[in-house]
Picture (cartoon, rainbow, N blue to C red):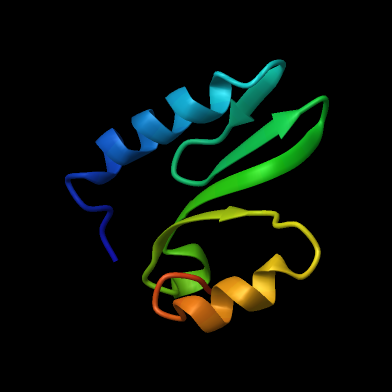
Length: 80
């Protein structure tokens, strides 16, 4: 999969939002890890392990993952 033409804009906007959090940092280019005090809170992934997705993977509160998966399985997924 090729990174779409919109991905650089999407990646830049996501970085702007995440890095606005106090003490937030990021590293990576195609796959980006966002961290606060060394703890990862989100990943921006492009075709991770060949899954064909451009996605933001982030942690949810306990129990919320199942609700999101049932609510919209096309949008929310559990990465493998």
